[in-house]
Length: 218
Image (cartoon, rainbow, N blue to C red; front, side, top):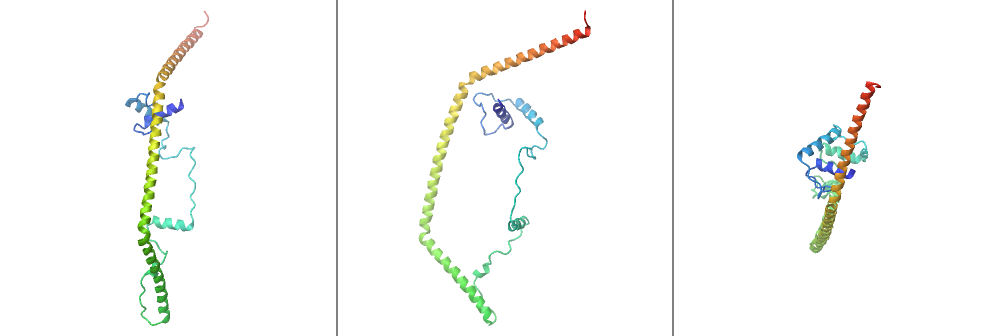
């Protein structure tokens, strides 16, 4: 009973929801007036702050704990400051000859030149390897991606086929039980009607008893 009520309420609130109704092949689509009544009843039970406040049963989010370095980076990003420090890229730039003739100045320039030479040598090696083997690696990578795509498409087709089979079985089961559900609904309505009749008769009898008590014994 509860899952059925939940599905009806969900469909009342979400008219364009992609989630199928529990008895989409049996239930009649509610009218706009019925939908409005259901929305009003549900809205009357909701808290005024239900759109912004979490439910009391939902636990609070865990407190985030970041390192001091990470906190500094978040603060820098929040105020949109440029990055300071980091790797010094000036050593990879072409050095200029010092204006003086001091040996220390020339030694520093020479060390920078050695570092730049090692860096450029490594780049040249990498570019040579890329030129020689890069095309084949790129083609192999594309082939692997195509194989992954074909595997995903196959899984998707199987999943769609399984979904269609489940929907067909669900529809057949719902349509097969349509008569039983109609009979149970009619029996429920008759039962409710009888309960109301008994309550009315009981209330009338109660009033009659009270009226006779007021009149006293004859």
